[in-house]
Length: 133
Image (cartoon, rainbow, N blue to C red):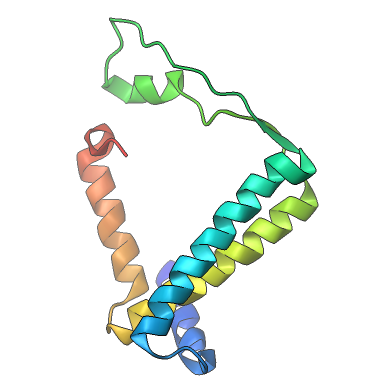
């Protein structure tokens, strides 16, 4: 089912990408849309305030191990609060535009988006915690 959704999305993008078909346009639009995602995320904190950042150095105990993602449980994303409906909608819209241009890049390079997701998932599943991203 997921592969059908990805394929349908890529096909839709290929139909409706009219103005920015040049690879240079696509690459610059990905960069622009990613900046807008970043800006939307920042505005949830600085403009709306529905989220707050509480960051400090994380101390790991000497007996911490990589087993069962123990380290991941010790760390967090430094965000407090709950994203409001308005900020969530804005962020989802900006993420959608980024996905649009990523799909456009895949189309122009004859790459299947679903295959990219599968390969990345397989790599993550294989490397697990040793991926360390």
